[in-house]
Length: 282
Image (cartoon, rainbow, N blue to C red; front, side, top):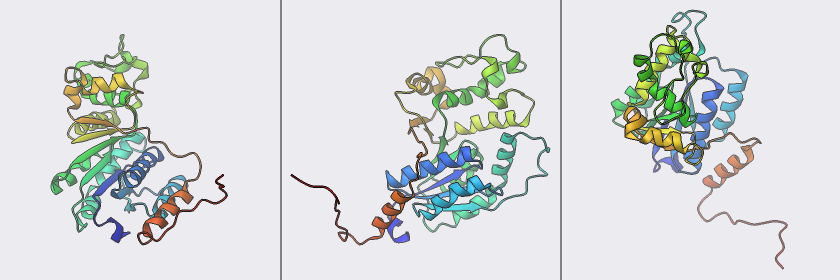
């Protein structure tokens, strides 16, 4: 693999734990390798991975499309209450793996071309800043979610009391308003640490150089326009937003296609002759 990747730009991806984050990041990894011809290293966070997570990681690792590096698990059990929300647990874990991530990234002989994290990994932007490379945020959700998350620091300042207690829908500039009962889970209790973590994440997303979004123009043209328009949400987001979707996981097994692609890449140039069996020209 090394001989084939030396001349290709090397990208770093960081996935937070959990299938809902791991799968979209690995799908992004595949697209960057197969369609854009990047050399990619994906860091995943060791968290006593479930069998389901292992079943996702192993095929990606064996395909040799990219490097999968599992960062060592960190004992975080004493850093939050036993009843802490999942968002809080993920944020604490991502915070604690930063030293291991920094050491692993700085060990590369060639400086990476860019650093991409999902929205739970924004506290690791310091690694990219230390290397002087672009830092991107990948939002594996839609534009409406990004609009609500990006506007959260403004709502945090302007709205008094709990969001659930508001009498009117929450107004998001240029986007559909949000009924109080429809806010995302971390917004249900403003005294909970997971809410404070989400406000922090929203602010840090704006400090990235670019936002990659798992949607497309025709699906969410109104929300995307609002995010880009300076008089609407553009003044909050401030960074370029690129819709790269839809990124979806294949329904059927794709291992054969991946293995074939890898095998072809390993063959000498002009050594493989394409043939079609069972096709008759008349």
